[in-house]
Amino acid sequence: MFGAVWKPLTLVLLLAAPPVSDDPAPVPAGEAEGPAAPPSKVEGPAAVDPDAPDAPPPDAPPPALSPDPEQPGASSSIPPNSRGGSGGSPWGTPASPTTSPSPGPSPSPGYPPPAEYEYPERDLADLPFGATAARKSAVQRNNDVLVRPFNRPVYSIAASGRFGTLLGGGTDIMQPFGYGFAAQLRIHFAAVVRSRFGVEVHAGHTRFSQRKSYEGFDESSPITRTTLLTDTDFSAGPSMQIPLGPLFLQFGGSAGVALSTLFRPQSAEVSDDEQVSTSNFMLRGGASIGVPVLNRHGLTIGAGVHHIFSPREVVIDPQAAEPETTRPFGTWLEVLLGYQIWF
Image (cartoon, rainbow, N blue to C red):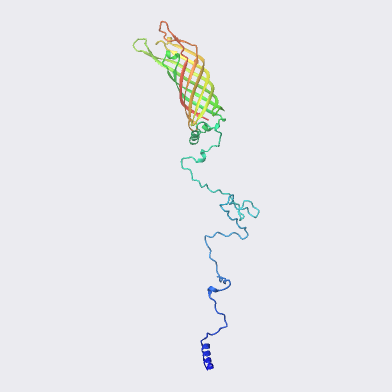
């Protein structure tokens, strides 16, 4: 009975089994073993990127890599050409040195760049008093004479108006105020404790005048005549110059000669006129302030005292019964205001 059942069961199993093939079973793509097959080669021209840099010639050496910017002392220069040319590019053409622009801000219009305010470092003893104000005037108005080293000389010429006031015996015969002009030449060449020592030369002319009326010949119309006292002086002597910020303090003394003249009418008659002329030794001392304004041109203002050693005497009032005498050429004060140039 077992044999009768076994044979039909075996036949059913054989019919239900899948057919057997000699080819190996396919393997899923995700479980493939071994390296992937290379892609098939596509014939035709390759696509070109327009932004890609040009490739170097095939016989050129490779360019040097850019150094790490964080590494100190790294150089970004390209090494010399391996073909024997020094300083060339890696492709054999000469390299021209270039300088990258400064990243700093550009100066504002109307003001000089900061570099123009810089001066070489100097010893404190070689700087003027008020060095900051002196440098500002030197840079903005080209008055470099204010910051010139003391071992270098400074020359100056001045022309000024002179306003005089009689302080001596001249006031006994006329009013004390006069006017004139003067010129000064100063040469300061020796450094003395943040100042300069030198010489000065003065020349000038001053006159004092007074009008007075006298009775005419017909005793109807008076005649006005002028009493005149003049002084022409030449002197020279030592001088000092001290830079004080944007200006100069100048003072000194001088000795020379004074040519003095007194013309005094006594009446309407010309024959009664009195005229005295004399030359005498004189001394002068004074001080002034020079202010450079632009390009070493500026103003000067000062004062001085003149003393003339004259023994000459004149009568104060010729009409008096016992007239007194005085010395008309004596001491007088001057005030100067004018133009000065430094070089």
